[in-house]
Image (cartoon, rainbow over all chains, first blue to last red; front, side, top):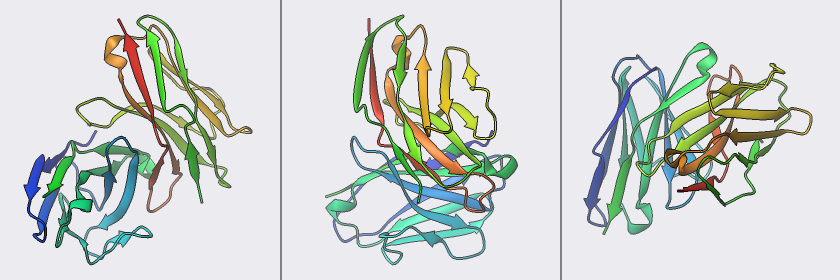
Length: 116
Length: 116
């Protein structure tokens, strides 16, 4: 299956700064990638669907101007948390769908964001 | 809208015992996929088992098997001969079939601890 990497694995930033998280599909060309957020001891919540060459689709309640998604190539999607605040501190995970009907998803190792 | 419910926040069993994790879901779709994912302390999401709704036969993967009751919208996971390495969060998940978005909806998770 697809091998998915994320960079950085963890990042600490000051409140008000912007942070970019990369998600790479290392061996599979992905026209779609997904971004999830996971708060401590909670489940994964889908934030948005990243579409190569077009705008991302955001889930209800997710601010598109705060969480900027760019899917500029078939192997890379980036999530930028703009003007980060402590409440944005979370674990961010991307996934790449693959297979017939996209019936398999391969997850990246995640990025832990801490906003001071 | 689809929902996935896991009613057991935590479970603990002795090594070598059998444990069953419960999951119910709600959907108006007739064709879909159901998954169990494992998230160990490393936070990497690992697919444990997958069930296609149109298949009546319950999926099995070595020590892992499911009891899929489509009419009851129930999808439980049985782990036989549990091992210490099975300690993790387990998420039940739902995905529509052949959806262009192929989004996965996760349950709230069950924290499973295997005692030596």
